[in-house]
Image 1 (cartoon, rainbow, N blue to C red):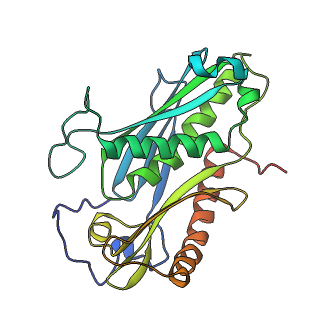
Image 2: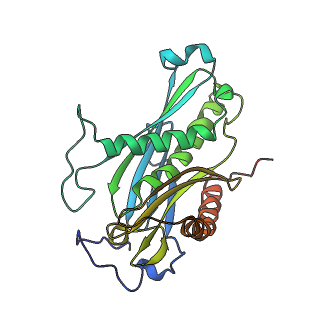
Length: 254
């Protein structure tokens, strides 16, 4: 069973959760079709971090998009009130800057691997709701949102709304950082809360980066250290691509 870390300010442990090495990812589970009313849905688990991602298809596109003769994909992100050790207030009229930043990351990542012309004049919104937070919620959201989007597109093909699934590639995401002088992949909360350097990476099936969000939380980092972090992350990202592809039966495009 996944372990939930209750202490909000734990010391960094000598060993890592799930007995993994510095370059190891947490156990990952992707479960499809968890929300029957959604066009596509996925429950994603990275260790104790758990989210539900649901895709909704609507006819038409935003007004500013109408002359493009192409579709649109966006995302929304929220943390449920009891997803952390202290209650998070529901976001209603006043959106949190963090949530808006994360949903932009998710949306950009998804749009980069979509053929909007093939989608036609439809809008797909992927809602990513955090059930339990133990670090890496945004990276888990990107990974699960792609699965939900894939299934929504497949449902559109079945309904003869579009002729093919308008995805040109996969996208996954992971965090990497430096904690206590150690470079670590896929940080859980106990690690992330103590990180000197924190970075989130969105990555495609063609082994290209969509986004590199890096911050020297407590110390700056050199080009050499940046390269070392990217080198540590790539095998884990490729493993995540394999898990995601196996989940939906994706075959790599030429």
